[in-house]
Every structure is written in C-alpha cells, then in structure tokens.
Image 1: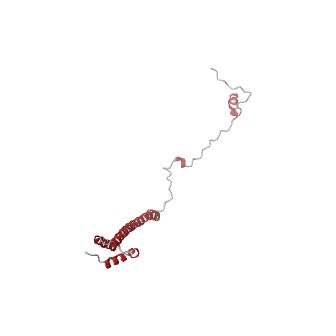
Image 2 (image 1 turned 60 degrees about the horizontal axis):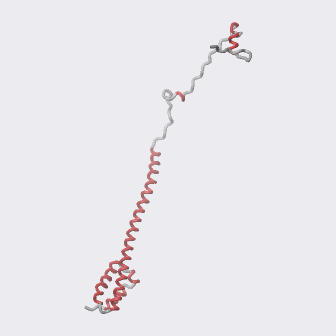
Image 3 (image 1 turned 135 degrees about the vertical axis):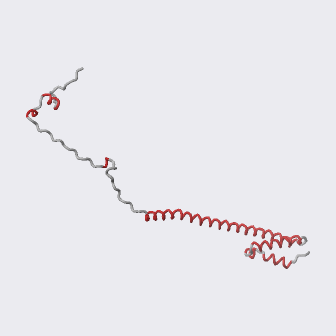
Length: 167
C-alpha cells in the first residue's frame, strides 16, 4: 500500500509548531496516530520516514506538555479551593467569636450593685465600736500622797535601789 503524499504533507503542515499550539490534546493525539500508521508504509522512502519520525517525537512532546499543563491546572484549582476554604475558616474563627462576645454583652443583664449583708459579712469589714472610757476616781486625801512603796514601784529613780530577788 502506498502513502498518499498529499495528505501526508498536509498533516505535516498542520502539525508545525505554530498551528500545533492551537490544537487540542485530542487532535494532537489523532495526528500522532496518523503518523504512527504511516510509518510502516514509509520503509523505502527515507526522507518521508525521517519527517514522520521527527513529527511523531514533536507530537509526543506536545501531548506530554499538554498533559502536564492539565495536571498543573487541576492542582492549581485544588490549591485555590483549599485557599478559599482556609480563608473562610480563618475569617469565621476570628469574626464569629467577636460577634458572640458582642451579642452576649448586649443580651446579658446589667450587673447590679453588690448588697452587703451585715450579718453574714466578715467582722473585719464592720466598723469597730467606740471604746468606753471609765472615769478615773478622784484622788482623796488618803490617796493624795503616795506611799513609799507606791513611789518606789511607780517612779524608779537613779537613787532608789531596785529590789533584787534573793534566792
């Protein structure tokens, strides 16, 4: 079976680097399969065989490149999704507690002043009762002059000997 050289050269032109960049991965795979089917028929035509093998290599590289780009795009989309969820939860973790605190302050009753129960409060908080001063009896004539014993014990002086304890 002979190769249709017109369609072969049309496929070569369609798979040049510039037009090939515009082709979908599926179309590039179709051209690769076309050249793979033509290769065994080009045994006696060295020039066409060389062109076919070179084009198959470049198409294989394009298929790998497009596969890598698809995988990269998928990973990028997954990363963006993860980033969105992370941002969502970060905002939720900071905003929700703040809202709850505000709502709890608004809805909670206002604190009432403390009432002190004097019976149950500690005695240290109570004011001490004033001390009553006992009146001092007035000195009478009998007690107006101190006795020598009172003087010695009440007002010691440097001339008065101190009583010493004897064993």
